[in-house]
Image (tube, rainbow, N blue to C red; front, side, top):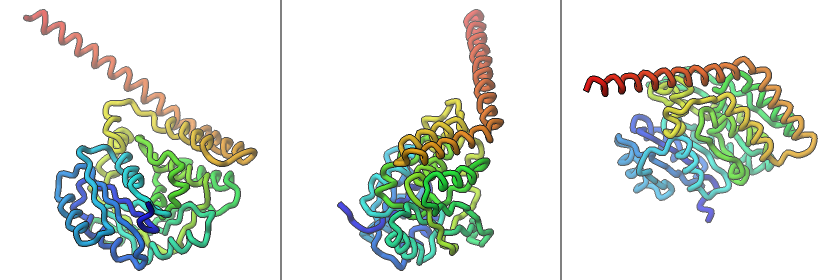
Length: 316
C-alpha cells in the first residue's frame, strides 16, 4: 500500500551526534508528501530515544530497531524494503538537505519519465558545520543510449570509488527494486549506481542542495582499509580474505547480464566493463598478491600455533 509519494530511508548506528540536524532538515522540506523510515542498527547511544521522540511528534516518521547490528548494507536495504512509495531516497544520519531538495527532485522525476535517479551537487561541511568545499560528481548520464551512459560511468570510476554521493539522490522505486540493492562488500554502492545507469538516466540538479558532513566519526574515517570497510558493510566479512577489485568486476558483468539492455547495446556495455578491467590490470594483480600473502601469513601462524600447542603438551 502506497503511503506517500516519497519514502526517505535513514539507516543509523550510534548517530546521536548529528541525527537531530538530519531529521530536522527532512521535516523542513517544502515538499511534504513523504515518509521517513528510520532503521536503528542496534545503537548503544541515545539514538533510540531521540528517534522515538521524533516519531511521537510526527506520524510520518516510522522508527524500527534491529535486535543486533546486521551491517550497513543490510540496514540500508532494510529501509528500502520497508518503503512503499513511487520514489525513494536514502538519507545519512549526519548529512542534510536544503528545504527545496525534494520539491525540485520530485518535479524533475515527474516530468522526465526516463530519469531513474535525480541528485544535487554536494557541499561538504565539517563537524562544526563550517563549509569546506564543493564536490564535483561528473555523473550526469543523460544520453539516450545505455552504452554511452555506461561508458561515461566506467570512465568516472576507472581509478576511484569515491564519487558515490549521487546514491543519496531521489530514485524511481520501480527501477531500484529490480537491482540487487547494496551488496555485502566494499563499494557496493558504486556497483549499484552502475545498475541504475543501465536502467535509465541520471539528472544532476545544478544547485548545491545536498550537504555532506565530513567528520572524524564517519564510516570512511573509522574504517580506512578495504578490509575494515568490508566488515562495516557486513560483520560476516570479519576474518575473510577480500578481493574487492575482482568482486567489482564480476558484479559489473552480472549487472549487465541482469539489465534490460539488449543486442549491440549490451555488447558495448560488456566492452566497457572489460576495458575497465584491462586498464586496471595492475590493481587487479594487487588483489591476487594480497590473497597469497594472507594465505601464507595464516599458514605460518597456524604452524606456529600447532608447534606451541605440541610444546606445551610435552612440558606437561
